[in-house]
Amino acid sequence: LWYHDKQILKNKMILNPLWTINAIYKIIDDKLIQVRKGIFDQGDIDRLWSDPSYKFAKDELTSLLKVFKICFQRHNRFEYIIPALMDATPPDEVKTWDSQGCKKVVFHFPFMPKGLVNQLTADLHKHIIDEIKHVWAYGVLLHYADDKETIAKVVENSYSRDVLIEVKGMYAGQFIGVVIQSLKAIIDTYKGLKNEMRIPCNCEKCKLHTDPQIYTEASLIEKLKENKTQVYCHRYDDKIDIQPILESIGIHHPIFDKQKRLYDTMMSNQSNIESKQKIKVFLSYSHAQTEYFKIFKTDLQTYLRIPGKEIEVFQDFEIPLGAKWDEYLQDKVSQCDVMILLVSQEFMNSDYITENEFGKAIKRKDLLISPVYFAPCDFGHEAELSALQFYKPYGNEFQQADKGLEFSYIDLVKFKETDGEVIPNANRAHYMKKYTVKLIQEIKNRMK
Image (cartoon, rainbow, N blue to C red; front, side, top):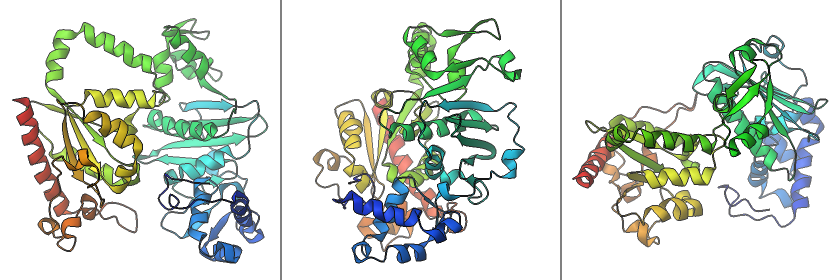
């Protein structure tokens, strides 16, 4: 076993998988943990992994429990939860749940492995507000990060071999896409596991009907491949567009982009004028710094302003669900005017970034590439990257004199221990102002 993409595991290779399996089952089968409904802590880890062979591998084994989505760590606590061992009774919010108006999909399986929703719970645990109350053995309640009133209910039914996803709230369309994407990724880990995603019709009649027309995702995609953009609804007794059905649950298909490009071509004169007024900026970063990246992007959009120009900022987590990830991303990279590289050691270690994003971008003579020293790293051995003009100011400019030459953007970002919110920092604003002044001047020079 080797998990090269996980920070704590990338330098370790497990030659005896059975040793790992035995360690995992010591946790799962422990009577005390089962009595506590799947909750365990460091004391349990030390008690159960007391064998000398585990002495120096406890952190790695705990990480494997999370990688396998067997457990997740509680918010701001040194405790872990195994969803499969939680109580089987759902909370009161589920018993009184009103499905009217919800976004809804059902994943159906001819054969369904047990615990799919447990894995999804571990994967999306950051969206759980009450980890004891909102997690049960066969389901979970999730809350959207940007709006706590947007709630997803995910329930596994072993008898009907279904996983039901219902989402209500203002951002239900976006959030159901997040849940679907996570569940599909888990399903993909089971080789050859057959399933179909059943989607209710969203026409006006079906929205009000308790028994709406049901389509499968595969049938809708098949029609799109045949260049058919509509499907028949028996309730509506007419054809309706496929695109709103899929996009209502966060699924985007590449043919929609093709149709949009054809439309844009027809609107050539106006589109050409508008496109000249837009500057497209692509942010390339490692997902290891996602939390810091989000803050950088917000700061960048605050200060990157050019009169008469619209600044469009794009990065990989805005890729619509269902789009071919690599093709969609490469298309965006090929169209951008500015590429900002948030350079870190994980960025340097990513073959995809260095070969497919930066590697292809460096060949474009018309592209402005602006690398930022985002987190401590050694980029000297990368000839093409080190040849570029980095934004790498000294720490003493931002009250970080002790960092010296090793000062990076993430040194300016601190989070509250209580709620994980970012702590305001005037030096971070000063950093971004200085950077955007330099970047705007370089953009204007290119436009001359």
